[in-house]
Length: 268
Image 1 (spheres, rainbow, N blue to C red):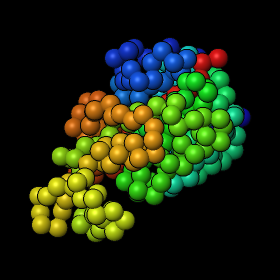
Image 2: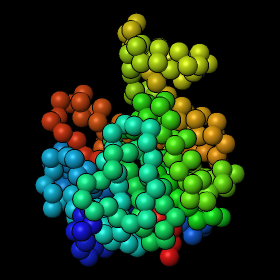
Image 3: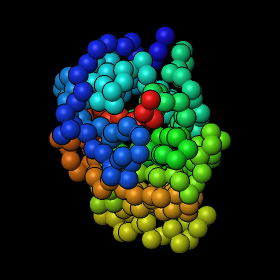
Image 4: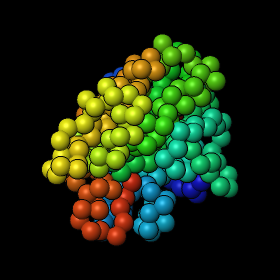
């Protein structure tokens, strides 16, 4: 049995998704989904696809079906891992049955299989090698990006025949520096490995706080891995009507939060 029971659904309107020109016209279907166009209510209002949320399961299933229909597939053609902020990536050739693997990168060379990650501030990165027909997706929070999940995803793609010079990587909606304040203990983890990473931090609102440029760090890590890298330029925290945000939910004292899907598939 697939992750989510398949059922018919209509594709979402273009206004409900974000796409990148870097991944367009390559025989690759992709979308960074927003919270627009779903059936969830309350704090999950819109297209909540988080199976780990406390939203009604039938709403989450319906939302996932609507999202994947936008890629001209069904949710029985969708594989998303159990994300744990790791540096692990897995290669797949079929939707998961039973328990999903714990990983934060996922790659495939199978046409007609959508792979994706869910996020609510962390960085969703979609990868495509259109020449060798290999795609990937990564969930990159600060811990995963620092730990190597982006490089692990690229390496997994190479294992399926991709070449770095052909890979395009696009970072989707992510929390941006003005809205991402962190403690100085986290800063130390970055600077211990490379003092030049100080450029990704600026003073926070208190002496022991810093504002972290997560998108800048992710794009720099991708560039260091020698792939074509870009950022879609949208902030999850700063657009509450458009995106779910874990940090915004925390600041509001809400009990839970929704997640948005970023997915990619090779056209059959």
